[in-house]
Length: 609
Image 1 (cartoon, rainbow, N blue to C red):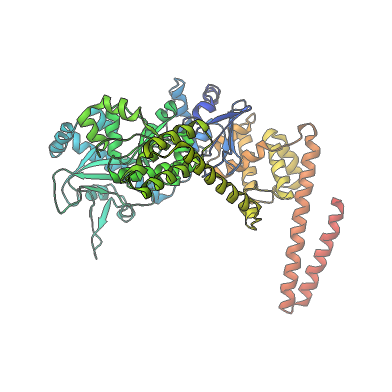
Image 2: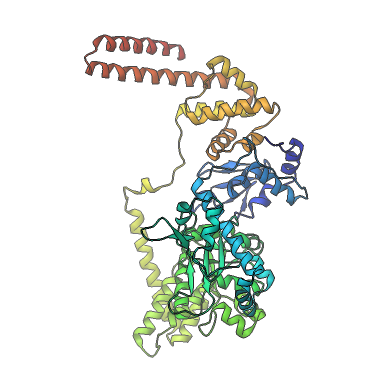
């Protein structure tokens, strides 16, 4: 068992770190009244229910129940041990805290053995590929190729680019020597099992290797590019989806771009990971990319937690423009401010930078994006002939459909004027068509509102209500969290088991042990020693629940009475059920005995009135 971090050091870290500053690096927060609100990073939601209280230096989600202080937030969001979280926060205020293996109270949040093995294998593979590229003769050709393509040493280091040997089993052999479970690693696609044999070979051979990192900076996949053209091989080979890599959830470079996104209050979304690297050469550090998939709702949720302003920068060809259109519509549906940086002449970011330079890419493309409506007009105009009446009407209809959903009169005037100039249709006629369209939609909306759908009540999001007995448990635990002496009152009144539900009892047992080690401790310090996120939720809910400290003893005794009454009611129910079972088995003596016991228990309930 290793030495724990001294209490005064923990206190120094906590007191000198502002929870709003730390959480703002992961969640976009907006101040409302005395608190800050944002989208919870621990569960998907569209309406902000995640609250941060600067005065108390705590956070709490009213949706999923997650809560705690700045240390537990970092533990949960980055899956860190308590000691690692304190160390990371300490570095922010200039404190160096030695890291060491954790004891029982300082272990990482639960992570499956399977996932741990997979991530460990990918980290090892990434280090191995990176070493081959930079420090071996076998990697020289690949390194020269990258340098000719404008990849600096800093860029190669930043993205941990590597090289895989052309050998069939170079990586597989090393993984086996390290004692790793090849059957588990195969599930990630890092290695492949030979057909009808219990032997494995490398998926990536003779390729420049680009690691894919998750939000915390851990390697979870790879993309490998061939060095020389080969008609029999794909130019790029990517890791398949696995327990640690789901394309719909991964945004390349989010781990590195997060702080810059928060700083600039904007994120640039590219079509591919190489576009991100090319943009990085041009000084654009707030770029991310999807991994071979369209922008998903999970991607948008991640982005929306950091910023409400998104710039799309996809390839300038027809396919890229269509992909940008779909992405822009998805972002607009979530009320995210969307702009589109259009690259001319069907080029991609790398092509543009090679032709016009890094400065031009930043100043003429990224810093001068088109508004959502302007972009939609550009896309809608493609392949349309305004000498053709049907094309003209279709174009006007498509743009008015978008305008009818927007409230800005300035925007409406601007784009209707532009529509009129482009199509030679009068502004008055276009306005008249817009009013008809808005009237039609208003009528449709009114009909939908007046239609009492039976499912509407079910669909309405409601805050979870708790039963009277659980409320009694929550209030009792709340008093225990704020006053250690309440534990003695409860124990003398109820014996060892004070709670009904296992989760509350587990929190109570841990709290009892905590007060033995920290007689003067508070609930925030208790949250930090809990390694179970679900227990932390229960403790946080209890700590924030309303209680009456001025009438503590009376309220505690009332809670205990309610819990004892509930237990007796449960006993009565069980005995009556057992009596019915005894009757079915024709054991009338046992049935009678159980029924009499139930009657006696019911009489004892009179004392609770």
